[in-house]
Image (cartoon, rainbow, N blue to C red; front, side, top):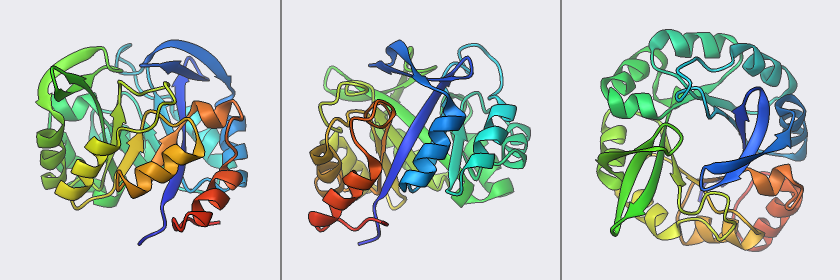
Length: 251
């Protein structure tokens, strides 16, 4: 079994790290540059930076802030928010991103995935999928979870893989910020049906949730925000406990 990755997520709004519940009721969680440096030193495997209001406000991700974060860390760095072209990705990579995450723009224009993969390679392209259950179906939502689509999670995830994306970041909107555990049943189905890595997001509240998503959800990586930002779980402690459960992690 490959080592499982622990990934803190910096949700950025107006230059600050924020965190809410079910994508709403956001509260301040600190300076993104300071948090990034802390997580890098604490042993995070990667860092994700999502400018959560970029698409809604129809502007580009904050390239200068990306640059300042990248200066402070020595781990792989994924950036998303408002990305809709090859040029957008070029700018972010020049400012220190290692990978980019696309979401709304990929649903609206699936060919964008192919174009980015052709230009930058699969390993550089992460497709984020925000979905929640509607009448028993996992339905994909856009614009920070505000706009439902006619896309279904598993069909869209398969298309994303076929178009060449290197990873999928799946967020359960129903569990986001609830600390009730990841959507392990959906994650297990994604992991079984796809051949690319799946990053679990939405619902981390305690160490057992991470263990469950690796063992039951078959996730390749687990992303979390508030439990790290508000010092509820330390990354070093988390990794030690996962290793005690015979889950391979890098320490």
